[in-house]
Image (cartoon, helix red, strand yellow):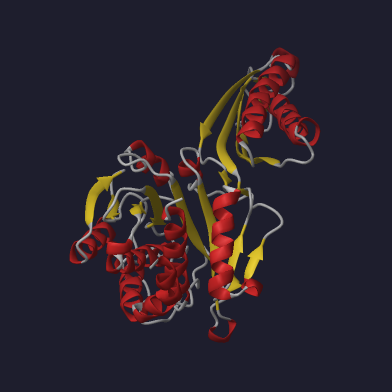
Length: 398
């Protein structure tokens, strides 16, 4: 039954494409920012209700958890879609252009949500042959506070406990009908960094009477940059960026306070812990050596995304079967950008991959977070088929 289902799943996904396009364009016209996805959540709940799918609303504020149970207990697979938009003006001239000034689905989360709804619809049609349980995670706030963490804290991966999770992201660098994979490390962690260097003010003519926070801060910046070049294994990757320096009041006054603001990116939790520890030690030690004091504030942001190679192997096999081996791209290097899917992977095994949506003939070429971003909507059929195939493979009895 499962093999027969796989053979026809793409045809079925294409069959519901007009339904999905209608949903996607409705969501695209009504974008909502992180933790404000009330209309989106209501629309999801209404559609799940029409399909007869049990659900729980309000997770993490605006998240929705759907549950599809097969006739017998078995493994549990979660499929995730993020829902939030960006504070960006939609510059496209299309019928489904955003109707909300200053807000736009410029990262494809409307497409992710729609594909998960399409996946749910087809899974319900084959519920009688479903050898386990599928959780549908409609997640808020990926772009802002890391809504994945909110869903984890709300117990979305528990009761019943999830055995594996799959997620995907549209990729305008890949043509429609192609899939991109990263084995192992996919995305970096991120941490927000602030270093406040405290000195003692004095007249610029008599600097020895004070402690120059600007000079101390300059030494701190230099010292932080040597952490990556001299303390991180050259075979790993880390980035420390100081993007803001603010301090001083007048050109003839020794500054008593300088604030450094930056970000830290690492590919593994081990490297992350080491780098963050050294940032604190270096900043405090260098400032002290200059007669100043450094106050280090580190705000954890997103966890790294490290794919389970076995599960990503399932994605590759299914994608090759569905799209052809030549349309499956394995990227050689990870991405230093962030994605909050890592919070799920800190709790369970999972795989996160890229779905091509590019179509140069139609001018669909702009990258995410761009005012002209769009997708070839036919790609949604491939995303739905793949997610169903991935879930069914994991749920198969051993």
